[in-house]
Length: 115
Length: 117
Image (cartoon, rainbow over all chains, first blue to last red; front, top):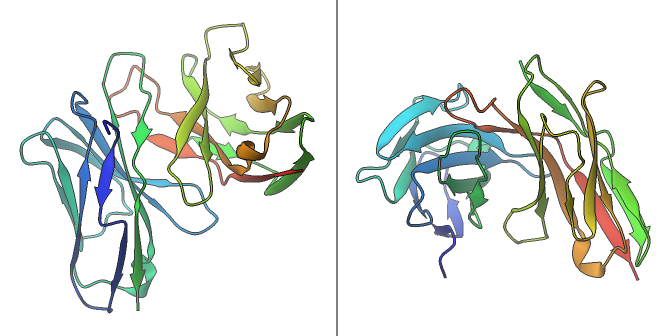
């Protein structure tokens, strides 16, 4: 399978715990995006990387959130001291950046439930 | 700020019939792209169709076509010969203009489409 993969697919945690999600993009893609989607809503942008550089972060990304893409391949999204409001689907997408074109390919998402 | 509005939270259509999903957006840019994404139940989001604003011809992909009205900032999706597999959430999405770095997508609130047998 050469699509975007995410791990784990589901995560249940208790409030206050730390969680980490992983995203593996399509291998030749240089851009990687994280979105958050709450039930019945459209995804909201969190952050994105071009290769290993994190170029933009949404104001939705509080200090408890950190994302990395250390070698320009896979990425991790960590949430510290989880809160119930963090419960959502976390989507990863990747694209091959060519000026004027930006088709993003999405992974299946990680559904986080904070109890 | 860019906004994307989908005014139909839910729609239903009989199998084999045609349905149109609406999307309006707001931008001051002249060159941009627009996308429709499909998210089936418990499955990942996939791109259905894309439209480039500088192209006057409406995009078509098999049973899917768009009605792009640039002046009205309207971008509707028409699904012809609806199939049960078309049941999904449909999102209209608008990236930052391609001249700028990032191209993060702004999504509408979605339309839940149910195709009935």
